[in-house]
Length: 316
Image (cartoon, rainbow, N blue to C red; front, side, top):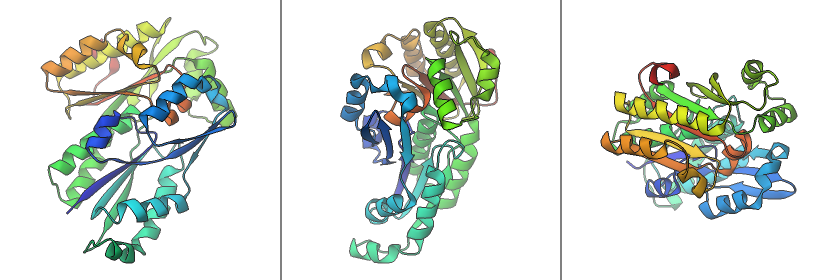
């Protein structure tokens, strides 16, 4: 039984990790300043995007999930013909139409896959499940990495689905938005109410760099600092201490909307690396994809790990 994992472009993972594990990425279309990008997590395309300076205009960007028809065609061409079981983990449904469109596509595929499988020489039934990851960015990446680990353990279909459903509620995410003006303007244009807690917390102090922490995509501000580096130091301190205390899966996922030179200069990064190495944890360090960086703004950071219930302040 060959099991495949599908994610979307909001899922941040290192490119080589995704390639090694044959991860299939549902693209998202971004239109900025008249230029169209299909975000498929291609590292060359992503680097071009960062170097173009278009991210500075990102709050005027439009991002579009693939339609149910487009996703249906991708599933029929790439998934039905290659796998016997497929799990599709989407960015939280509160932020995107991808879950809705992928579910509609799956329902259509399940009634029409037989001929395509037969033509590809694959025998037997095909089954599929679309799951709302309840995560964003690095959190979605962490769930995907854990799911791949479960697939390698050859769990049954039902056990795999149940574990994924349970595990996502154990993921904790830290987000540092670099530019609050960007977030406010983008939210205003989109009519996005999800930043209301952040706005209420910060008031008019848009020169503050907050740390937003919580389970999944529903975080709350837990710290406000006067600089990005201080906020990063707090998150690195938290992650390092949490790694040393123990995790529920041997991964820490960290994605940054920065150049690789800037990423390597992040305060506390090498300390986190050392802690991961000493504790048998893999640090999944990546450049934010185009979709993620448009959503949260240039220069931002997202870190995710899975652990027993705790507070951010417990590890400062």
